[in-house]
Image (cartoon, rainbow, N blue to C red; front, side):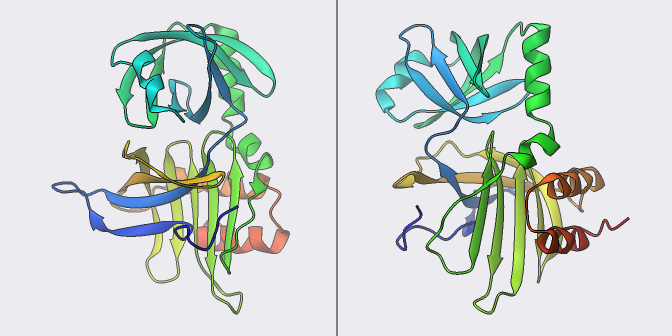
Length: 243
């Protein structure tokens, strides 16, 4: 559970990475996920922080495990998705203190198909669960593969922002700033942990203007979710996509 000493949900850093246009944002992440990868070399299990059709990011709890993930190294193991196991070969592409990015190699058709189904926005939405927070007014829903839906509201119940982080992108409505979309990537910096929650610094690369495709995916996600009906309608209305 998030404590009062933790950063605010969807906490935005005012600083900007030098010589870039990225916004730095601290996002809450669960330290453990239901998607797991067992490394063949030593049988150790790692949480899958993010998953795509092309690769995965592993969260490392112990920095000593970095010895197994040098840039360019080939890793073999078993990926656990929804209690099913799949043999995986991957190549290490980037390394941080607590996070390793790997690109899949030679996925068989069945594994590729299962991952594609797993990453369907409608499926991810149905798997979302509310995460308790002691922060008054904040709502956090978490789903597989680093899927997060965050709401910020005032003490009187008035919502002033919601942000959906999904499949390496974000869609956001802000009462002051309006709609925005873009891509999300890890900064690979050390995260701050508070119990089962860690705050991971991510880099947001905003689109020049809201991307209709990302907004359509966000709409599909919201309508497929188990959010209260009134909250669904409110989200879709602010996405500007009422049909």
